[in-house]
Length: 349
Image (cartoon, rainbow, N blue to C red; front, side):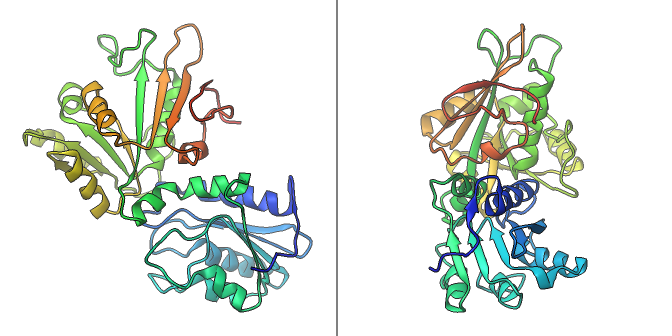
């Protein structure tokens, strides 16, 4: 591929454009399934950002097309010179026209791509087509900061599109003694900042996996409350129900709150159900028994542990099978967070 003419400079130009595109795409994580979240920034010839856009939901304009429409509406399309995109532009017809067509019809001649298209069923990639048309295309190295964040952004989509299973995040809250059980009369024991973080994670995911023990003991609502949710979002609650004993009243109440409720008698059935429903990212909110089943089956991708400290802020730790975890992009995650380490949960900067 040809090398784009705008140079990558820390804190300015392309680096700033990548940061803006990733941040905009991250705002819509949890709303785009079965499509991946994608962001796009368009720059002028001097490297100044003209606009930033993201894919909002399936059927809506893709990030590149929306960014170009925003430039046109602002009267700046003629100045568009460079596109910085978190994911390789599509080169096939789906619900919308190929993004390569939109880019080729614009003045843009330099394209920076954060991650290649992971879809094994799509041939004739967008990057190759843009190169063949004479555009300068640069793909971020996967070990660069931009590459890592763009890969993390689409990690759930990558797992889904390759037919493996949804990305599974386990959320576990522990008190100072290591127990998951709240004190009598309470539903939780974590600090307010930890609750906000947990609800941001709910917002980012497409489904919640739970067990019958949790349903019967707590009758959980599983709604997003401490942060604003995506508009008209209808998530799935997937219940591991080996005996078919899910209370009809709880199912009806969950459906009234806007959820789709599904059950399966085993983990294999549960994973297939979620794949069939187009779920990219599922979060496990269950009790010790369900978490033990998942741990023994190695059926998880990252494991978020919130450890309550009565004398101060909670500790938030991540175990992950790969450093490319979408948790790194969830708003409110401690800035010092790294895989296999704990950090103080503090307000987002």
